Image (cartoon, rainbow, N blue to C red; front, top):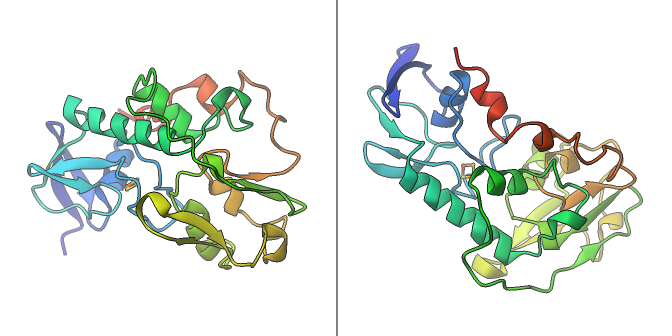
Length: 235
Ligand code: FES
């Protein structure tokens, strides 16, 4: 297999390492492909579709598709960004995201994507679903109002913590995050040193006593928009 392949992203020719995904190859050269369920430390989940690009005219997940010789990729187009914005809007109405009252505000990837796509308000009716809180664990809580079902806790628990604390049940609008216990998080194997909560992109799975330690105004996305760290790598 060739060590590099030539791909074109938004008209820019790139020599990408063979075996990388489109998202990884783009990130290496400072091209930001918006994403939510993807995290560089974890196996891609392919859940959220925010990373959708067009490859030779066909929509495809950039986080799971491996680069191939001669691929012509569209990323930063009005059509794709509008589709991504629509996904973010749907995630907002499917949950109960009260950003001003959320400890993750300013560090939340969902909120940061909404800002990046200049979402003024969701273009869909709010569903105001009834969601459960689970606060009995001494070190962590789950607020399902803020869960976007990205699966990062599921994968990080398995791949980083070497446990299986989290999972999913149901499908479509009835899909929900489950835990490996009958009643609540305190009955699981989740320990204070586990990393799963640090992979949650929103304020859904949070460590207790950490929430407001970092002052508002100094948080990651208060300083620069999501994606700016990747775009800063551009030569
Ligand atoms: Fe690729 Fe979610 S980031 S599907």
